[in-house]
Image 1 (cartoon, one colour):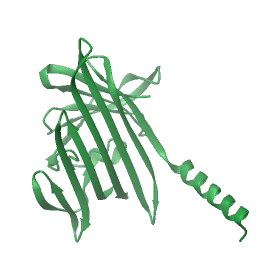
Image 2 (image 1 turned 90 degrees about the horizontal axis):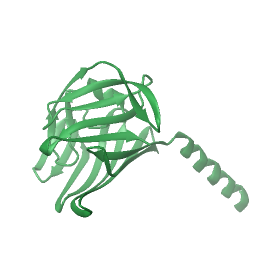
Image 3 (image 1 turned 135 degrees about the horizontal axis):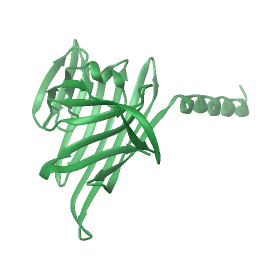
Length: 209
């Protein structure tokens, strides 16, 4: 194969992968004020696997002075709806935590600030980009390494602002975590928003850009 043909084949391959990649980029607001972004990129990883990269950066200011910083980076690998691998690194205002998961016989080997353990069966993280999440009763918190027992409740549908336009969406309440939160999906299952009450009664929201 000539170099030019190899180059063309490589370009076509990259284009095919890009065509199947999905991305969610959210503006994050606290009490209505933008404090940062959270971006997710999902793409094929070969052999029926998918890889997800999640990156969040928040900064809260008071009178123009930064009073809180948050940074989170996670790399996940999925087979179907089952998490197979995780590397997560979080800096929560100076408190650092790292969580790892590796496929093991019958489940996942977890390593986190909580110690080491094995989670049996198919396990999902809080993968809001995947509407199959709503069928799960336990989820892995990739920031802490804890497995949370959760419940889902469908609430009344409503409209949310997505990319400057009003969009009809389904709303599901997730409880069992430290604080309940509402997650928004369109009828075709695309994740478009999240609302939560956080420390001090403040309102945190994600809206798809």
